[in-house]
Each structure stands twice: as C-alpha cells, then as structure tokens.
Length: 453
Image (cartoon, rainbow, N blue to C red):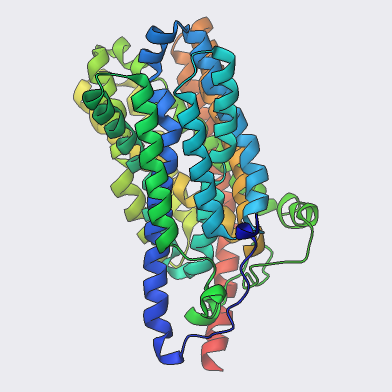
C-alpha cells in the first residue's frame, strides 16, 4: 500500500519564472480530475437506485427489501465518511481518490452477478464504504490547490459534479439497456467499466499536494493569510497529532464545525424531504406520475447554475459564505410555503426550480465552510464529521420519519418537518454570519499588514 503514502516535498523546485504557469496547469488538472472522478463515483452510487424497478421485477424483491438496501447504503456511507475522512488527511489524495473509485467499480461488477438479497445487501454496504472516500479526498485537494478568494467558485464547479453524475448514470443505464437488450448484468458492468476508465484517466492528470510537485504551498503562492474558526493559520497541511487528537481538539471542540454540521444536516432534511417525496406528493396536486418524474429532473437541474453562481458570489463578497447561505435560506422558506400551499401547476414548476437552487447552493457552501473552519490537516475529517450528520440523521429523518408521519397524519406533517428544519437553518446561518465576520476582518487586517511589509 506504499502508493498511498503521503507524498514528500520534491527535491526539485520549479524555477520562479515557471511557478505561475505550472500552478495554473496543475490547478486545471486537479479541478478536472476531482470533477470527473466524482462523476464516476456517482455513476456507481446511483446505479442500483436507478435500476430498482427492473431489479424488483427480475429478482422478486419487495419494496421493503429495496428500501432496506438503500437505507443500509445511506447509513453505511454516513458512518464510513467519518472514517475515510480521517484517512484522507494522512495519505496521497490523488491515489486515494482513484483507489476508492476502482474498488467501487469492482464491487459493483460483482453485484451484477448476484440475485441473493443478503449478498446484495452486504455488497451495497461495502460499496458505501468505498464511496465514502470520494468527497473527503476531493475536498482536501481543492483546499490544498486553491486560495480562499477563489475557492468558492472552484468548489461550486466541483459540487455540480453531483448533478452531472446523476445525469451520466441515467445515460449509462439507457445506453447499456439499448445495446444489451435490457440485461441488468450488462447495465452494472457498463457502469463499472466507464467508472474504471474515468479513474485511470483522471489519475494521469491529477496531482497530489503542491509541495510534491516542486511548488510552494497555496498560501505562499497566493501571498495571503487564511485562518480557521479559532483564528489560527491554515497553512500547515500535515500534522504529527494522532487522529484522535485531531478529532477531539480540532473537530469536537470547534463550535463552528458543530454549527456548520448541524446546519448542513438541516439542509439535508429539506433536500431529501422535497426530492424523495416529489413522485408521491405531486400527484395529490393533480400531476401525473410522468410529470412528477420530470419535476425531479427540474429540481436537480436548477442546482447547477445556481450553485456555480452563488459560489462565485461568495468569493465576490470576500468569502462571506454564511451570508450567502442565510439569504438563500430566506428564499428557500418562501419557496417552501408556496410549494405546499399553491395548487397551480405552473407555479409549482417554477417554485421547484427555485427550491433546487436555494437548497443545493447552501449545501455546496456549507461543505466548503466546514473545511475552512478547521485546519488544513483536518480537512478530510471535517468533511467526514459533517457527512455523518448529513446521512445518518439528515437523510434518515427526511425519508423514514416523514414517511411514518405522512402515513399517520397526511401530507400536512411533511411541511411541518421541513419548516422546522428550515428554521434551524436560518438560526444557525445567522450565528455563522456573526462568527464569519470577525474571521474575515482578521484575515483582511493580516493580509494588509503582510502587503505593507
């Protein structure tokens, strides 16, 4: 496993006159590699979900069995993300990212040849563990290669790979179904082959940390000072602390990380509380099942331009990301109220487009905020810590809890859960605005002093 060892600083330094061009080339490679690698991860992650109806028919599974497999994946992913995040901080991010995708593709290929419920359940649990490598490795690379003043835009572009991955997953399914006469084995194998090819190509163009490439770290290159939530420098990307020491000192004792993680969990409740129930809720408003499916696509599609635009805006307002999240939350609450009370199909189409943007944009920004609140050597661990709350609590409450409440009390129970979650988002982002303002002011003062010196 030596290929996963943390890369050492290169003995050969890039000449000063070539640093800028080399940095630009490497940054471009890192952005492309993280985006497309994550698309590959999403193809594997969603293939079972996308094919759940043909699987039920071909394998004789019940809806309850499908639900158990999917919930097992979600819980496994949330727990594994915390573990994989701690590992991502201490290994070669480039190799770790590719390894996770290779193993995911292999397990998915094995899944193609099994019809046994318990075997599939175990394989999906194992896939959830390898899938948990993707986000922490990508987050760490983006933090190591891009300065804070540009990171919002870059991170937003990477975050749109979630939605692109969903599209490419459907494309894989449709292509494999057309070419191989609807064979489920061929569908799973096609997804695995495409993801493995993506992993190979992206491994060739990706780069580990700048020092390993003979370049200065991003803080020295950008000539800026970046502080974490405690007001300490984020320059150091490695540490001699144990994983437990980092977890306790830099994560558990960091109140801003807790606030961001709880805000993210609340946004996840709203996200899945809308997304998961569109096919079931909208027919009560006169939509057909086919129209409801298209509205799921509208909800996802809206995220791409909104996430990129608001990521850019968060950079333009001097990295005041909590402020952007707060404004989005207000719009989200208004849109939720219209979504639940309107009977006009046209208005609901428009409102779902707005909801897609006002939910996914804050989700992308809080993912970045939790990294910036912790030291760089705890970037992956902070991602994993937040991911634990997102999936183990956020997604579960939005699916299992809402399902039970709707069964007992009707759809009026759904809006109450989502309003409560949205209200918590508003309170937490308001708190983060207050804290963010002091950190940004301190960074500005230190950067001015550095410039004058």
